[in-house]
Amino acid sequence: MIRIGQGFDVHRFAGKGEGFRLGGVAVPYHKRLEAHSDGDVLLHAITDGLLGACGMGDIGRHFPDDDPRWRDADSIGLLASTLRLAAEAGWVPVNVDGTVIAQAPKLAPYIGAMRQATADAMELSPGAVNVKATTSERLGFTGRGEGIAAMAVVLVESAPGRG
Image (cartoon, rainbow, N blue to C red; front, top):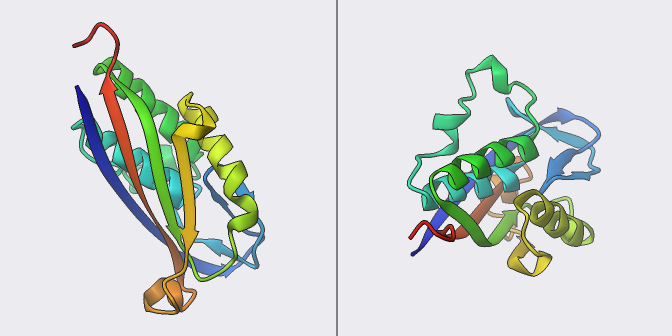
């Protein structure tokens, strides 16, 4: 059996900084992202999509932003925890397609590293992970440079021997 899940996340820029994490990769920028965890919108969207595909709710249910345990949490760790939950429920990821929406900074130089970091975290081949970046043509909060958004679709299948 196969199932698909969709995830979404957004974080606003909050003052000066040295950059942020995106897809498990450090992206230099003159602003930082406001977040309870490390604010990696791409990995949060992927985690949310994985939870959705497995019928396990959403990222806020498993890692609430009002719980001090998740303060400054590494999103690779949140994804790893979610992968364990999925495996325990009999699901394994097949592929991921993520889109980051940001007016700035330009993300093309980091896409390959994001694909590799995500593939490594999910124990997938890099060919099973796609990451794209786009702008919103200067429309909305991302277009005004107020924040970054990400969407992801995750395909899972029943683990071998699980049906």
